[in-house]
Structure formats: structure tokens, C-alpha cells
Image (cartoon, rainbow, N blue to C red; front, side, top):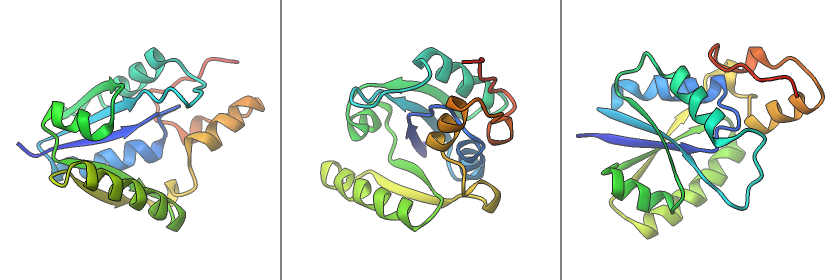
Length: 154
């Protein structure tokens, strides 16, 4: 079985995340969209909210599994028998950052391959951090989020 892991904090999940997963669906038998619990990263939304949004966003995708983990990504890949790590790229800065992580992951487990997909043009400026900042200033962010994601008033 061809299994890919799409890891992230998804704080919150954006249309860009949704687009990358849907673009990758024909390439893999299963895609695990999993929230990596990073203890050094402060999140705006609870793990429960983020898992709920991911489940709702991909509810119509039979071969997408939603999960969370709190170990190294390569260790989680081995636990789930995922041979691929799926990553989306918006620009060259993303590429350099993601390539460095990919290189480290390859050192940790040479059998796990990172697959990069380019973000769609309309999604290339969307980032979770950009969305969080807009939320902090009371802006309407619905155009950047999947329809299933409803941000409570802060």
C-alpha cells in the first residue's frame, strides 16, 4: 500500500492545505493528515478543534485518515507504514526550509521519501500564520479557509 503522511500544525487548516491533499489523492492509496504536536510551538487553536476541522474538511475523501502524533515525523511514518512525506510549497523560501527538513528526515530514515507539490497560484500567499495574525486583528478570514472551518469569535 502506497501511504503518504501530510504532517503539519494546521493552526488553522487553510485552503492551501486542502488543495495539496486533494491534488495528491490520485498519487497514493492513503494519505494520513496528521497534526504533529510540537511542544515548543504555541498554537492559537486547540488540538481538538484542529482535528475536528481536518475531519470535516476531508470527510468526503475515503482514503484520507486524520490523526495526531507527538514523536519525530520519521518515527510516526514507520508506525503508520508511510513511505512518503507530503509537503506543499508556496515559494522558494518554502523550498529551502522544506529541503533542509527533508535532508534530515532522509538521514533519520533513508527509506522515507519526501514528495513536494506546488501550491495552486490562488493559494500561494496563504499561510496559517498569516491567517492567525488576521484573526488577532478581527479580520474575516473565511476566504482563506475550507468551508468546514468556522473560527469562533476571539
